[in-house]
Image 1: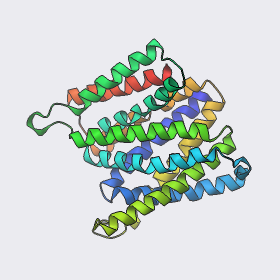
Image 2: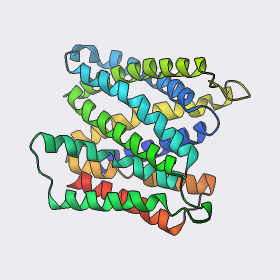
Image 3: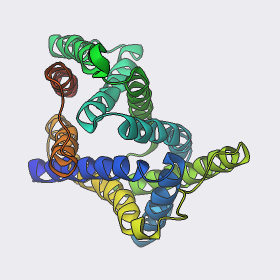
Image 4: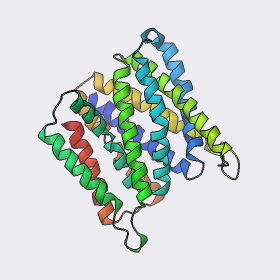
Length: 285
């Protein structure tokens, strides 16, 4: 059951990342984030009411609030990176956020094992290679790599904060709801500020109503992935659940290859692969 739900998490997260990247190529990243997260917030609110999650309210929710402030920055950077560069490079780089919980553990006195040390080395090598040499303009833009790494840092911080925000499944739903409400509020303010500076909030053709199903899917897939991961972690070793759930970049890369016919240069594919391997080593360590 652990393997089944963890692999379902990878599938849902991978498809959500793919959908978010495609939508950002058609509409501003802030709009994609705000709309998709609003839908997710509504669904989570229903789940919290249905499960009695309000009874889990307490000081720990401040961690969820902090995660909600960091989350929009990470998501916007991630979607912009997906819009600028190959998904097969961006998505694995973004998974390097797993290094953040490792760093938190170091601060708290934990020491990484040999597997984690190897994972850090492999991941850093992957970051360097994934950018690719800039010969003949064929490499990935530096901005894409930077945005991917900023999103990784943000995602890692969110994971660490959410882990401190709850100790039960119903508490997790409440923490995720608080996080999403904060996401929408922060993203909405950022969108308002962006519009005031003259940036468009909508594509030239107006609000993409035809994309509403895709926007809903992105938000709901993210919520469902959080749920399946919680079930996986509860029914078996957390390490197994984390490693299998970390395979979602493979889903994103395969979707980009299948639907967008993306092709990576050998050095970029090698770097992306090493980044993913490093992530798995960090999670397994």
